[in-house]
Image (cartoon, rainbow, N blue to C red; front, side, top):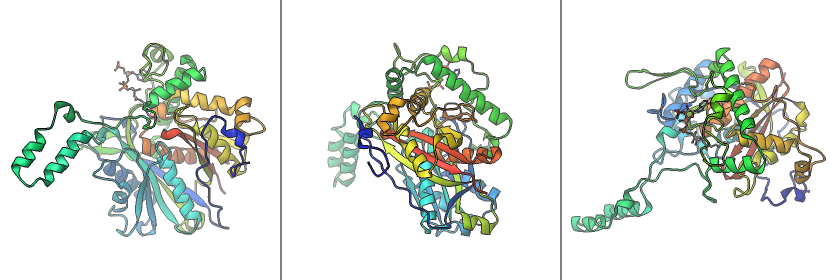
Amino acid sequence: MLPNGLSPAATGLLSFRYLSHMLTPSPGRRAVVIAGLRTPFVKSGTVLRDATAAELARHCTRELLYRTELPGDEVDEVIYGQVVPSPLLGNVAREVSLLPQLPKTVPAYTLNRACASGAQAICNAADQIMAGHADVILAGGVETLSDVPILHTRKFAQILATASRAKSLGAKLGLFAQVRPRDLVPVAPGIGEPSTGESMGQSAEKMAKENHISRAAQDQLALMSHQRAAAAISDGRIKAEIAPWFGGPNMDQVGDTDNLVRADTSLDALAKLRPVFDRQYGSVTAGNASPLTDGASTTLLMSEEKARSLGYRPLAAIRSYAVAAVDPGWQLLMGPVYAVPIALKRAGITWQHLGLVEIHEAFASQVLSNTQAWASAEWAKRLGLPGPVGEVDWDRTNVMGGSIAIGHPFGATGSRLVTSLANEMARRDVQFGLISICAQGGMGFALVLERIP
Ligand SMILES: CC(C)(COP(=O)(O)OP(=O)(O)OC[C@H]1O[C@@H](n2cnc3c(N)ncnc32)[C@H](O)[C@@H]1OP(=O)(O)O)[C@@H](O)C(=O)NCCC(=O)NCCS
């Protein structure tokens, strides 16, 4: 058996490796979620188009500190996730920890676990708290796809760098004379796998075909995502997790809620959309994929002891987490199929104990491929388990909608999921909740939350 409890046969044709160990909590030390807050999640290029990642991250964190009345000098560290940082701002977490509400001595770092970055930031915080290295940590993530770095080609960048060191005007001009029009074409980051060149959308398309996920099933999931998110906005559950944004030169770029949710979409409207990534035979459309999104989210974590001493009532404790990876050249977004049973095993529970489940919706085809595998006896054999992980119950899954409707600012989604799940667990008095996130690089992330008295 492998250390994670799966048999070597589980690896099958996949390159699957257990990546991170949960620290065993020292007696009396549990990491708990106190509260979280985010910006509205909006279509890139709209309300938040002029904001930097640092402004978004600082905005929701400042408001979180205000609403929780947390004295800034209680904060031990800030950990943030970001996938596409600006080269001018490599450590956005430090910009957050330099908020005037916090002492300038609060250390901070930024990490990249692709779409699971916000969740990884929260789990790193939990590890630090359980190890006794910290009591209070602000953890979250941010992405602004309205402000992605646009780069020069390598050749033009080399000419610019050499020219900056040239000793004479003639030498500089000689270098610039080597520039050809194609060298000036800007290079933007793509949403693709560096190792295979395949985009996320192409991978989702491949998964739909190989796992026989129909277009109708994908559109049905997308419809549910929008309908549930719209309901959660109108009954106030989503707005309660959002710090309204007022931006622009005249403070006229206002966002008080997510602007991608379509209360009025329908199966007919979704069915009319043309496939994007395989125009002839494909089934993945703008309607059943998560959209390009801007936003930030912060979650406040404490040791349980500290929370009680400061008078906070924890929403939930971090019970376990796990990360796994598959070969990105296979089915890129199947990592959660491996991560979830490990997180459940570490939590000492089974799928049947889960009162709520949050599955990040990168694409409907990915969600349905993951849920199909968890329910499958054949997959149980591949995972080295005695039986299937579990059958999804949609009445308990993505009950406030998901990333297809709400949007997916890569670095921020994990923190949104933890905050939303913890709040909903408290409202429904659910004991265990699970989060599942697929991520670039073939990675899968799973996290178990537990309600505590
Ligand atoms: C799929 C994708 C390419 C679509 O981008 P886009 O074309 O800019 O998307 P739009 O929002 O303009 O939508 C396209 C059309 O579909 C329509 N549409 C989208 N969702 C709809 C819905 N739920 N109901 C009805 N119509 C919808 C839009 O109104 C638009 O129609 P129009 O052309 O008449 O204006 C882009 O969202 C994408 O790349 N998503 C994947 C992101 C990704 O890979 N993330 C990583 C995941 S881990």
